[in-house]
Image 1 (cartoon, one colour):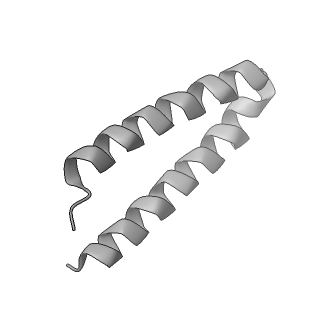
Image 2 (cartoon, rainbow, N blue to C red):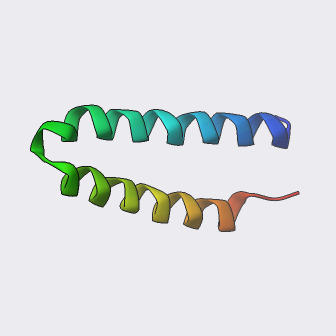
Length: 54
C-alpha cells in the first residue's frame, strides 16, 4: 500500500475520532471534549513518529 494512501487513511481516522469525541462527549462538557482531543493528538503524534516514514 502506498505511503500517501496510508497517510490519507490515518488523517481520515483521526478526523473521525475527533468528530465522534466531540459528538458523544459534548453533552458532558467542554473539558471532556478537550481532554479526549488532547489524548487523541498525543496518541496520533506517537503513531506518526513511529510509522510515518518516507
